[in-house]
Length: 267
Image (cartoon, rainbow, N blue to C red; front, side, top):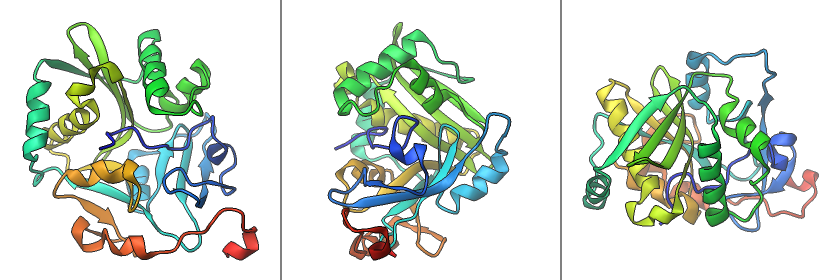
């Protein structure tokens, strides 16, 4: 099962973020085309947490200073998923993951890129991805640490070793996961799952109603792990948050656009 943080998402090294509104290969489903619409915020602009909270309910996400949502004619498969923290119940497997990581120390701090975190990021990408996202320290900072809104960095350590880093945005209704990267040498710990579990627990303890896990895409193996955090809710095509089981499968029936068609054929 793919773990948290492994899905491909837009970043300053990808065409999707460089030219919102253009067509690109879908990062989630094979032989599909995707298109994003959104706005790249200039350095002097900020995004109020309350405004971003509203955008989350409109199926938007953030990557660096890009605020975007998928808009692919014929397809609505990318739907935001969130976990109601008060009713979340970890599965037996998730409880085992928590026990395996009982020694991990967690620190929430302001986002600050370091050589240590960049080294971990490079190690993660070398193991998880195909090289598209490894664009050097400047892209690392722009992708994860140049944020227009209220963002925190959550560091996870086993002893003195930094084993995982999570970036998340704080909004009035909860915490929105931006990206997670972790040390592939600690595969037994299931760190992608553990970081999500810890952050859900943190939200519950802080009285935050929801933990936002980003997009869920029916039919994408990269997204399957998100549905394991139950109960959870998915943003339906009509803009209503509904229990996952009520809307998860119908989304799969939508026919996405195949790449290679001109834009007029996609309209």
